[in-house]
Image (tube, rainbow, N blue to C red; front, top):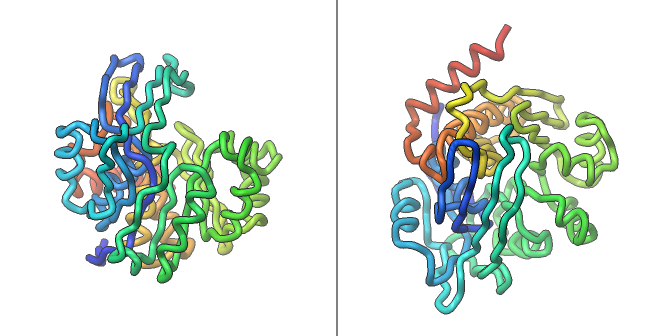
Length: 309
């Protein structure tokens, strides 16, 4: 794969401090957030800029972890004095397919969005990680040279901010969404029908994440479906951030290839799957910290072998 070494990919989203309980154990105060997982995964494939905010309680070891990913430009990371970093706690069910939120402390998310550095204005590939759709829409105005805009969303915004979400959808090139959210947004109970219906709302392509069952792509040039990468039970430690890592791997490849045709996005889904397979093997960012381009390539070849016939 040829990587174009520019800074054309930017992600806006959250950086958080997580406490997670799974069948494998518990991790308290680990680094989390949609922006964090996305950027860590994307940086394995292409340079990425981040726009996010943390409070003055953000741990120094978290800063060191983020700085350990050499492909991440942190000029858009605001350290907000007198504010608190977003915190989340969750407990996963034994099968890892469901979870209960134990607490949410919004912190900086209750305040104004972080400023976008002027030098980020030339960003061409924009990923709007999950937050209020009105905030996502406002971020677009900072990127006049944008070529491809992709966003993530969640059931909360479908329930309480549907008008804002619909206004965002008509400005998007792509949407990444999980299957239950796709059903809620579209009113359809079938993945294929739901993706087609969502595309009629604005996006050119839709990626429906199905957890352990992979992902489905609806694209103007055709459709595609990929499974998840099969893992042994002992490899499944913490699914937090897997969806964001999947999006990061996907967008990292799209940015590196400077294309979003069907063939590129199909391969991008595979890279996203490989990134998520690293994330799930440990708590927080530890799985992605241990990932290398060699391990990504190795798993991609395993995945290619598994899915070809």
